[in-house]
Every structure is written in structure tokens, then in C-alpha cells.
Length: 334
Image 1 (cartoon, rainbow, N blue to C red):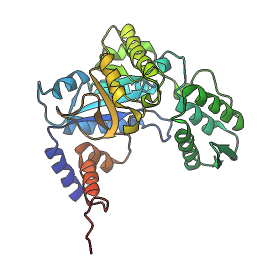
Image 2 (tube, rainbow, N blue to C red):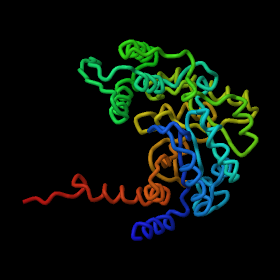
Image 3 (tube, rainbow, N blue to C red):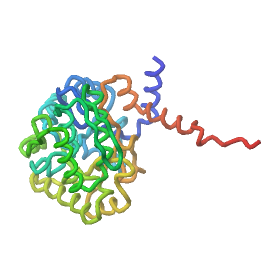
């Protein structure tokens, strides 16, 4: 009861802020990287009852204060997985809810796997129970006997290679596939499949808008300005050519502070994007940097945590914790 009251107070205090929720996947695979459709529909029902769900077009107006709407929420999805169409879209359509999907265009075009899905596939399909490996001058013992161990290995591989140039990373992943005795299909399997352009075109006629998430899901701060420009410009053009609609919004791959720079923001300006979204936790208003809009992860099955996240209670608790941390408390001199 106390937590619910605190959530309501935070909701009231932040009523003029605009919340942007982000998802990746809605499916029935039952792994760490997706939400089941029943939970997603539960969240949608909750949001329709307690908040004002808006479109990206509305959002662009709200943050400029050309119109006002209390407790506004924008729903976004990153990457462009097929299950956005198969499972999420029917629920959004059922409740007449708008959303925006940020597309990784080479993935949509069937040119690539999303690289992090390759090692997920390897870890899920290796016949090995454990393996010892030396990577970047460190020895690791990876175990694969349960989901917890596999998840730990996936995180380990991601942390090791997310900052590595793509060409080198893909070679390393091929070596790992050989080590783990896994053959990687040329195209993503059904579990990791992308949306098709036909899916996207249908959704675009029914309340779903689309933005860019780069061509290949590379972290822009790790690229040269020339390569980063190509990722931004070519993905934008690809979407606009297919849909005959402007694709003026962008979401950073990974989306944390270290994943973009001031140069990245200048490139977004140069390529005519109106706004960009991070995965940094928070809400937005007219004072927010247009290329640093914050979002709130909605990918949790814990009801109370979801309520607290959306209301702003978790954000408030985090700020209070920072204020009370020992690093920020003045030391008493003796």
C-alpha cells in the first residue's frame, strides 16, 4: 500500500514529463530476451487505464510544448524482430495503441544476423557441457548446463566483443562457433528472424511508425565519423524509400552514455534526424537535448517493478540513493 501510494505521488509529480518505454521482443520463447504476449497485453491494459499513450508524431509536438497532455507515454521497440509483428502488433491493434519501431535495416533486408543473436544461438545450441577458452589474454571456463550458466556466458561474450570492430568480431564469432561445435545458418532462424518490409508496410498503415536503429547495429561511438555517417544516412534512406514516409527519429544501439559522442550528435543533425533516443533511464520535457532523449525499460514481468518504473518511483529512489551515497556526503575533518 505504501509503495502504491509512493508510485501515485511520483506519477503526479512527473505528470508533465513524457515517458518513453522501450521493448525489444514479445514472444513465447521463454528466454531472458523476450516478454510473453500475456504480460505485454497486461501492461498495455494498465497503461491505457492510467496513462495517455501517444504516437511519435504526438511526442514530437509535446516535447516542443505545442500541445499538452498529462502523463503521456510513448511505446518504442528496438531492432525490428519478426515477433513485433506476430505477437505485439495484434495486441497494439486490439487496443488501438500507437507505437514506434526502430529498424536495423540490413537485418530487415536479410543481409545480416544481429551479431548478438549469433552468440546467443551458439550458446543455446552447443552440445558441450563446458569449455575452457582463452580470450583477450584471459582464461574462462564456460558452462552450459542450465539457463543461468548460458546467460552468464552470453553476457561474457557480449562484454568482450561489443567494442570490437565488426570485421574482427565476426571472425572471432566464427572461431567460437567452431570451438562450441555449432554451425551458424546463413540466415537467422525463426527465433531470431526480422520483420519483412511487407509486415512493416502493413503496420505503417495501422498506427505504427518507424525510425532508424542504424544499418548493422554497430555502436556509433566506436566507428569512424565516415562509417557512423553511413550507418545513419543509409538506414534512414532505406526506410524512406520503402515506406515513402519520412524516418526522422533514431535510437542508438545499446544506447548508454559511452555509445555516442558529440560528433555522433552532429552527424544526426547533418543527416536531418529530428530526435534520437538513448536507453538511459529517465523522462523527458522541452528542456531535453533532442538527441539525448531518455527511455524506461518495460521488459519486466514483475508488476510492482513495472508500476514503479513507469510512475517514476524507481527514478526517484535512484536519485535519493545517489544523494545519500558516501561519495557525495561531505567528510568531517577532525
